[in-house]
Length: 511
Image (cartoon, rainbow, N blue to C red; front, side, top):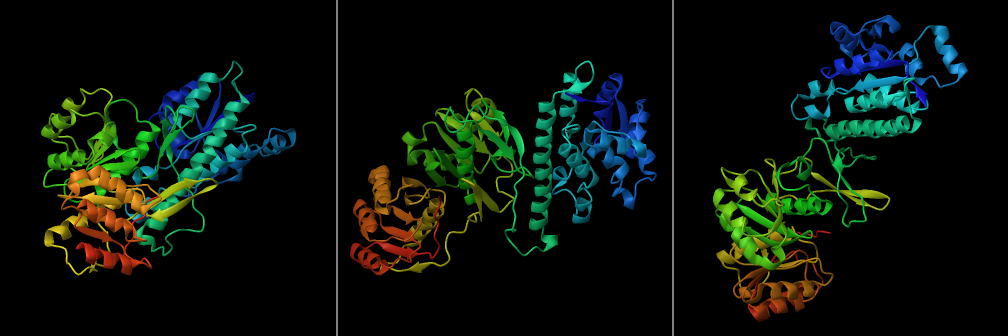
C-alpha cells in the first residue's frame, strides 16, 4: 500500500477542483498547488500552499516557467527510502504523494487559434510533473483526469493508503497520455503550413488517440477490441450517433470503407458496403435517385449493409430506406422528420458527420510489429491522362460513364473490375487474385445490364481475356490504367471486338 499525506495540484480548468480538494482536506491530506491553482483554492476557502513559497519566485516568462524547480521535483522524485527522503527533509521541502495536473488544452484548441497562440498551449511544466510522478510510481500517484483523483479518494483505506497495482496502472495510463499529447503536437507541427516542414513522413512516428471505450468484441466474439480517435477527431470516431445500438468493431471498419465513397463524389452519391466491400455505388441529380440506383446494383448483398451518403437524408429518402434492413447509415445531416422515421428501426445505427472529408491527408494501417502509412488516394482524382487506344472512340455518353466507373473502382478491393450504367455500378467483382475472375463475377452480378454498359479495371489487364469476358457480355467500352507488356494484345482485341478502350496511366489498387 502507498500512503498519501500530501498532494500537489495544478489545473488549467479549475471548476471541478473545489469538491475534490475538499475531500482531500477532509481526509487530512495537505494541499500544495501551482500559484494560480492555489489562489483559486484559497478563494474557495480551501487551504492550499502555493508553489511560490517553495521556489521563492513567481511565474517567469509570462507563465512559461512556474513549477520547474528542484524544490518541487525533489519532493516528487524522492524514492521511498531513507536516503532520498532525508535529503528532501534536510532542504525543508515537502514530499508529494499525489500529483494531479490538468494540462493546457492543446488538442481541444486545434483549428481555433493562430500558430503563435496555439504554440503557447504546449504544456511544459505540467507534462514534466506528470512524467516525474509516473516514474516514481513506487511512491507517488500521478493523475491527469479528475475521475482518476476521484477514484483514488474513494478507494483510500482508513490510513489514506492506496493499492500499489492501482497506482502503477495509473502510471502506465499517464505515459500513454503523455505520448498522445506529444504526438498530437508533433503531427500538428509537421502538417502546419506555417512550419514549412518539407518531409512528408518523419524519421519517428507515433499516433496519439483517445479511447472511446471498449467494444463488445472484435471481428469475432473471442477477440477483444476498442476504438480510439485521433486529434482533432475526424471520420467515423467523430460522428454523432443519433440512434440505434452501440457500434461494433466491424461497423467501424465498414463505415470507414463506405465513407470513402461519400467523399469521392461532389454529386449526390450513395455507397453501400458489406464486409468492407462496396456492393452498390451511384451518383445522381438527387440523393433519393442515388440511393435507389446504388441499392439496385446488388440488393441481395446490400441486405444488412452499411450506407454512406454525401447529402442530407430527406424525409422521402428516410421512408424508402426504412423498408430495407441496414446496419448503419452515415450522412452529413438528417432533414425534418427523417430521424423520427428511421429511429423506428431500433437497431439501426444513425450517424451524423457534417465534415465528411478528412483533414489528415494520411492513412495508417497496422501490421504485425508496426504500421504502414501512406497518403490517401485523393478524392476526385482518377487519371493522369486520357488516352484513347482503340480505333473506335468512346461516345460522349460513354466517356461520362467511364469517368464514373474508374472513380468507383477506387473504393473496391483489388483486383477490381466494375461494370457501370447510368452512373451506377451494376456489377462489381472485387478482392479477387485473378482479374479475369473479377470480370466474370462482375458480369454475373450485372446480368442483362451488361448490354450497353461500360467497365473499369483498377489496374492494367495482363492478358486480353478480361476484355473478352466483358465484350461477350455486352460491355461497349473499357477504361484501365494500361502499362502491361501485353497492352498491344488488349488493344488488338478491343479493335476486333469494337470496344472503345481508354488508358489513364493511373493505378488504383486498394488492399
